[in-house]
Image: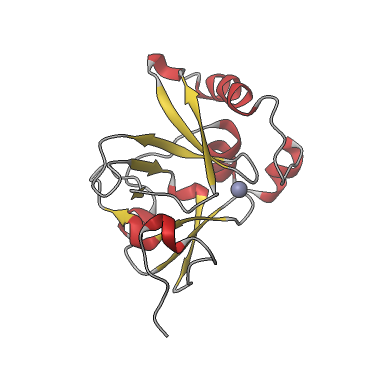
Length: 165
Ligand SMILES: [Zn+2]
């Protein structure tokens, strides 16, 4: 199917005119990322449901952007959405941005890393409390750091208390 073409068109639209702190040429991204990660992060691809081992990962830790390494989600906000994609009810503070995605004859809210512009997934408003949001992410766009603690300053936003000492 025409996924590649659509992906390029969408990718340009979503990130146009925006300079990200981490910026590389498409060639450099291709060298840095696996083909699957490149397709999702740089071409707005979507991995097949149920293919990421992070879908069933519920251990404590922090999820980082697979493009630039920025922390984007905490394990404490992850839940089982039953969709086959890793799902969270909130991102970390100051980690992601959204844009309107009108591909595939739908209007969806696209989610990308605010540091490198890498496409992570989409957000929907049918998630659980306390936010009611469902961040439907591609596992291949995330790096899970098991056991890692939250970055400084993110505790308030996710409703989590900093680890007791
Ligand atoms: Zn990133």
